[in-house]
Figure 1 (cartoon, rainbow, N blue to C red):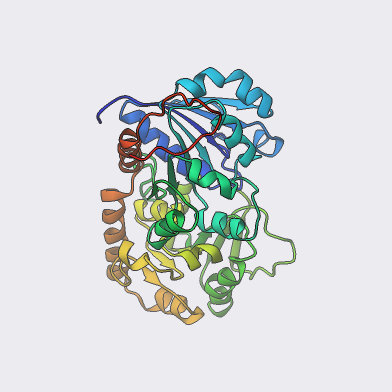
Figure 2: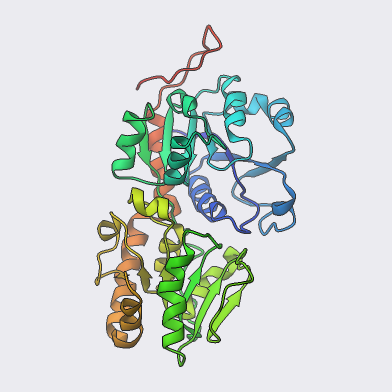
Length: 371
């Protein structure tokens, strides 16, 4: 670490993980920043659906504050936003495009965007949907940190005009995700909020195997699944599972399933935080395929890639216990070596330190500063 950084993050939610995978990503990253001596203020829009489901209202690794609207954001926190070494706005922040404009008008030292939904964001921009980021704003950012790597980074620079685009993958807090040693309860499980584009894959890779293997036990944890879904009798449902329960959940599965959203499959190089969590807990993963997955976790060595129902059935019925454990240990070693919150925090800090500090502009126009 070259210097101690004061960072302000405006994100979807840190306090609540209810239907919100961003929370675990931010928690691991910010704990890593704290461990390396950096200071973080997380600003979160105070909305009822998260306020009623807060499982981390008072974190011990950063300051957490809430704002009710844009006027309160820029009125109450203007000085802190100006003084910070970097301000990072996250994807899916309510009124995100307006938030970026308001923050930009304060002329922060460095203004960045952390996209934990990059393929979804770019698909939105291509449709003219600027829910939380406007296309005109991309070139104004000092850095665009992306959940996705690979060719997406070149696309961000060449097509959208990003000054600097770099991958900042999700990560896992290695101090909180480890095997618990509990007895296995389920043969295959899945953790994820309902998504229409993921549901056909969940049907193919979990629900259909459950129907064909009635003697085995399955589980799906996550909210917002519609009532009309036909759950097989051997599929247990858990409506919501807070992060504190994730290690136990993974540890009680013989295999866990990873299912990827369609936009992220199309983009490739978009590892889910659930991959890292399950691997850190020592649970072998069955996953659908996307470009870049083999680079992260080689098929048959550190993961089982499944394209068809029969691939899952074969894994559940044919893979020996020795091979199952070998796959789990190989994935865990890879994740703990390069995909922890501390490792990701150091990547972020190094990138921020390389960005020049903006001088107070003579006009109100904010443009990116080349390194």
